[in-house]
Image (cartoon, rainbow, N blue to C red; front, top):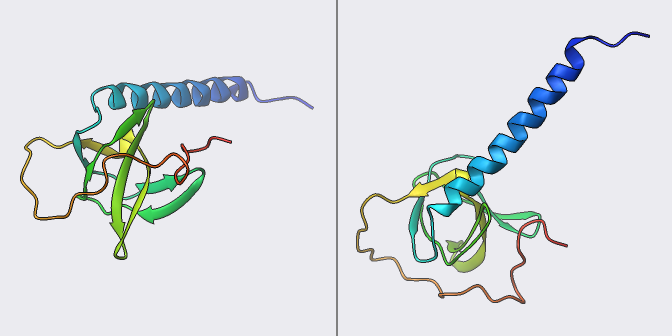
Length: 122
């Protein structure tokens, strides 16, 4: 049984794309610090707690970043009338260009460690 000569090339290309995407995510999150307001730009954005999506994040939603860990940004959102803390992947958001005063209530400043785990940690 012979393998296609394209198979190693495709595997290498896939690995390179994954590495590039991870590095871009890290570079993106370096531009964002705690206290930064970001805007959701991806329709795929979800608020994560551990490896579970707990709330969808609508495109155009404004989020206050409370912590940055690699490509992950901690934030709080009002989901169905309840504040939920979790993490969003940096490539799904961008820094807000202009800061506007908001009439929205402000969430707590920090994520309680016992309630919200870092995405994909054991």
